[in-house]
Image (tube, rainbow, N blue to C red):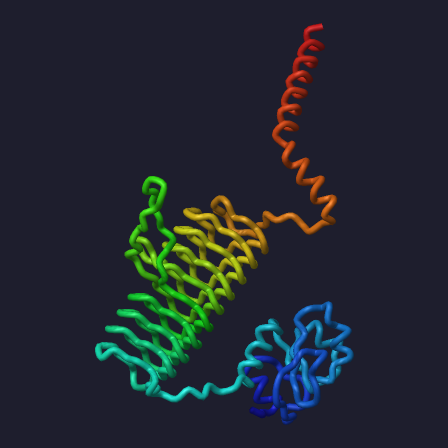
Length: 346
């Protein structure tokens, strides 16, 4: 899709400096951009690439625009502006409304006339598919599940019974919503499975990455609020609640009944212990283990920086000696107080 630079500036809400009639055909990185393409600068460490780029125009901040003599789209948030520009050149979806002849649809399912159901899909009894929803090939939507207006399910997504997906959501390939939570009660030497009677409720404008799983609740529902963004391969256990507009990076594991606040940012491979609470506006850095509740907004980390293996082993050995070291310090403090007391009595 081609447009002029002036048209693109209007679409992304940027201030144009340069040739408004210049045709632009796509977006690219500073290093890879060529004639007709638009790039962006959002990180000062790429100033060298800015000087060498062949892009026809660059999206950048007011301050960085002083270092660029070419066509500029000036924005207070260059990365957001670039994301909007990218969406202008995204390929159109070719899904047509209707039900593919190789889909299996239960007669009691309700499918809007504008929805698209791909080949190999199985739609269960009493399922509801909203207007303009797009259900990719081989998806399984079980009894009573519902998909909101404009939501897209990529191939091989599974929605288990009675789960609710809001409007304009995106579920990438392999997502499973509503599988049983991990509930097991001790029964002698074995285990007795605890029935998972709750469901999953997902709000509007939620995106869930490939192969992420969200378990159904044991009694109450697992809830993901509006605008949440989940990366690939995340585990959300039963009865978890994730607040609106929180973003969570890949391979994070959230144990049962954890409560995560609104507008949080959780880094990759974070572990969150069950039955704790995380306040609104908390950032947790990658590889952190959250083992207790966080009641105050801020940035938190519990990981150690990488180091040479010999030093890591020595530090690990010292960590195992901390308890004994603490006892020695207490004994020394007691002796010091005793000595100070003897001096005061002299």
